[in-house]
Length: 214
Image (cartoon, rainbow, N blue to C red):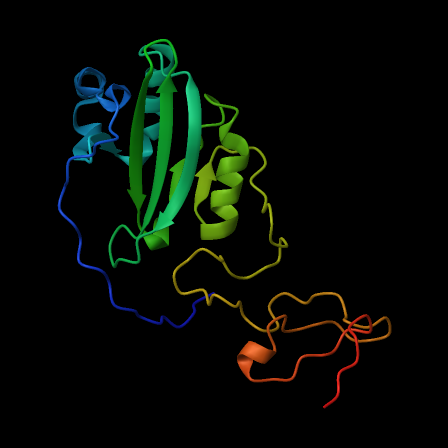
């Protein structure tokens, strides 16, 4: 469901600075070279920031790339997977993956980008079982679909919830009426706005809340 955008000023991007905390574990030039040799144009770009490497991959090849990283290059541990709303006209959504080669003590970050109207990425659950709940959370919060996931249900929000709370246009205090909550009193009605005072209304007083003089 489309929501109104509220724009705020953006900070000026900072240039790449030397990172005194950078570790040798993030120096994975040989791994990136191996990926380029194996997948050619599917490896789109490599960015180094603060001593850490990020590899951009075509979304439709991310499953193949991660399978190669695990089975051939030894990156057997999927540490993290999540999504980002870049709030851009093109390639609005980004999914990132952090993988670790435990034996070599190396880590690599992969990213894919997808369009708002085609926010679908192959699921990694056939390669990393740990991707299961991470992908469900990303779907729940951002609406990104993971093709091939066998149980892609919402984790936090009700199945019939019409919005995705981590999209940039979603209000910080939610949308009144979109998620009815239990009543504040035993015989009261459902709470349609949990932040009534913030929206200019007088909140219903809980029966457990001590009485105060007006």
